[in-house]
Amino acid sequence: SAAPVMTLDGPGGAGKGTLASALARELGWSLLDSGALYRLVGLLSLRRDLDAEVTDDLDAAVNASRALDLVFEPDRGDGQRVRLDGEDVTDAIREDAVSAAASKWAVQPRIREALLARQRDFAQPPGLIADGRDMGTVIFPDADLKLYITASAEERANRRFAQLSALDVDANLGRIYREILERDARDASREVAPLKPAVDAHVIDTTGETVAASLERVRCLVSEKG
Ligand code: C5P
Image 1 (spheres, rainbow, N blue to C red):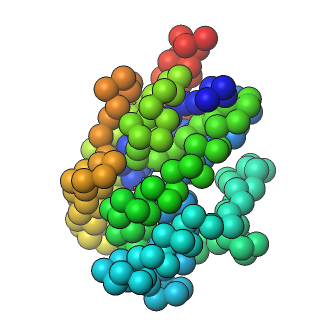
Image 2 (tube, rainbow, N blue to C red):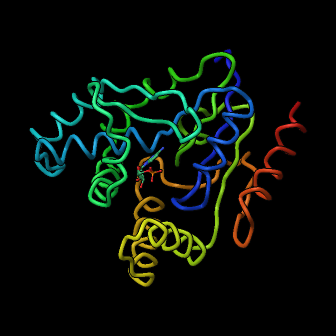
């Protein structure tokens, strides 16, 4: 595509969402949060009671994925907001039930295929920051700069625990850690678009590092690219 694309892939909780939105703001580029697309499919499926194991339900989910009426609202400082059929679902798609549903539909090749063109359409001038699991491997294999953002499972569990505690949500660190390991295993072992760094990706491990420090490392890579 004509527009420059930078991809950030990696496991959940590694900090790529934070880095991606900071970069998009700094560069004035748009931001594709591809996880939100899978979360929207998860949300729809829960609302319509669709089951990936039932053929008619899978057909319905594939059609819904192709027709998603979604809008990412520009970030006004408090993060990008997501609308589905006009409804603000930014918070609804972060719920645990939706996370689980999203990662179940994400193993379905027909769902991934249905979302593919939609994701590529986001590559528009002046440029795109694409955040996900397969941005550099499948969706934008010719991206100008590919980053793979990771952190140890312990670190990611601690960050999630701190986030939830700050929100006064009752959380169990051991359970969060186990769920992270399960989701990693599911994302890495699926047959289509498994989670792995592109061969030409720069791997950035954010374990024990502040967001500011990680962002500075990423800025250096961006400026090297010129
Ligand atoms: O990144 P996020 O946690 O919002 O993604 C939700 C789920 O969607 C992930 O657990 C993963 O299974 C799936 N996903 C994917 N490919 C992407 C982005 C997300 O399979 N590019």
